[in-house]
Length: 193
Image 1 (tube, rainbow, N blue to C red):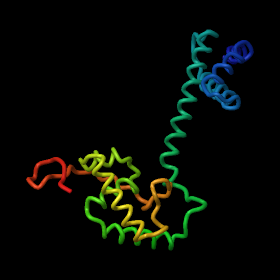
Image 2 (image 1 turned 180 degrees about the horizontal axis):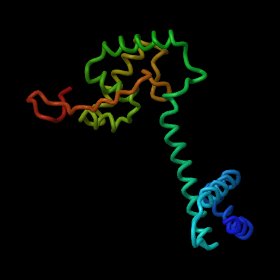
Image 3 (image 1 turned 180 degrees about the vertical axis):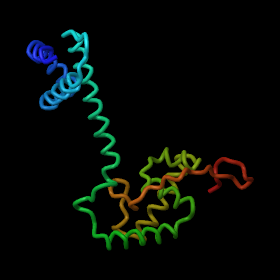
Image 4 (image 1 turned 45 degrees about the vertical axis):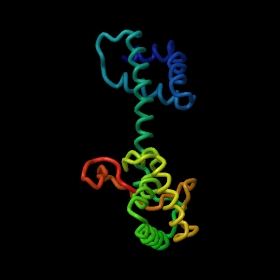
């Protein structure tokens, strides 16, 4: 087994590195991928292992290691905000007061305006996504958002982020399923403004 590893590293090492470089696009990552793939391949004894078989195993392990790393990075980026604190996070007292201010301001909005504003600015949905959730036309949602934004800006002043800001209005996201709006007759469909 050690002989297979030595032969593979000596004769096919550059080709394996080249393959790993093509997969990852980074020389250091390629070196790490080759090393990890060799360890994974030769950590267990395999019977009837030819040099060609070993190279195929290592190439597959390179691809698997790379894809595992990409998936791990993506998973981490989706939950990282749940674990750590932002270095430039606002003072907790100020943030709590801002949440209270936002809730008070949202309470002054009409129900449709409030839902549109929460979906757009807190859930970070696009206008078409908000329209789909509310079962309304895009133009109707834009009207609600325009009115809500004007009212909230008037009430909150500079503390209300506009659409270009990356700061969420509230720190939490709702995971409750949305319900379909009903008309005055009680049938599912578009609500009357």
